[in-house]
Amino acid sequence: MIRVYNLTYTYEKGRSPAVKGLNLEIDEGEYIAIIGPNGCGKTTLIRHFNALLIPSVGEVQVAELNTRDSKSLLEIRRRVGMAFQNADNQIVGMSVEEDVAFGPGNLGLPAAEVRRRVDQALEMVGLTGLQTHSPHTLSGGQKQLLALAGLLAMEPKIIVLDEPTASLDPEGKKKVLTLLKTLNLQGIGIIHVTHSMEEAALASRILVMNQGEVVADGSPGDILRRVEWLKSLGLAPPQITELMWQLQQRGEDVGTSIFTVDAAVEEISNLLERLKSARKA
Image (cartoon, rainbow, N blue to C red; front, side, top):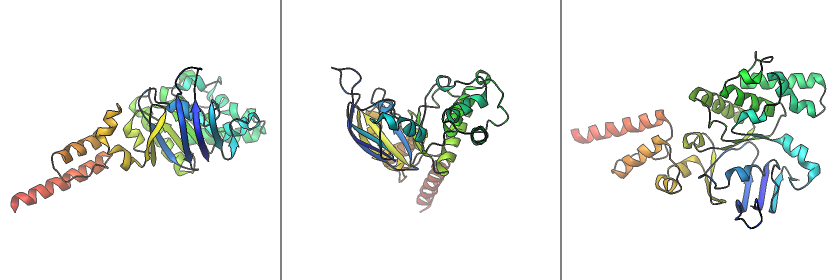
């Protein structure tokens, strides 16, 4: 779905590139998390996916459409929706339903089709019943869901998110993350930039960036168990994974590719049983 060839991007002449020499392929329907320290190029990279930025060197293709081709921009942005950290920056309507209708309405679709898409998108994000509400009356989590509804009404193939939960309370985060997982199960690709390793663990593939380059690409099990390496980049591994790592450093026979409380409880329970049996012996 997305192919990146030798991508280099420099914001100002004479400055170091924000990203340099990147080569990357993203398949349709993948759930990818992108992590890395501040200033490593995460946001610069994803802004190339729907042609908000055009490469200084190299190319980016979306379903064979080149982002350098101005005639392809509308179709690229229909296929790849972008959600930012501050949902207020994406809300343009005076009411919830007006905001969701903005995108499909600008596609020139019949009114009945716009209505169908609005109702369907609001149902998918759980905002049905709030159609006539003013967006400014919504909570932070609801605003982020509204921004996602606006993207869903465009029927994208991929949704790209730049730290969408950073300013949300735990309940708002849970709703957004649950929705992302549901959308991915329905075949929509998710590309999620996050500083939370717990959120990254929900993906099926993680890209780690540092100093404008992708320095690791693998499954959560491959990436998040590298506790010392992640810390060297200034990243905080999932607390549960670090607990397992610390137990392993003490010589205990436990796995390190563990990210959930339930899995950790099971692993520690098994460890205690083994220790108990060893003492009896």
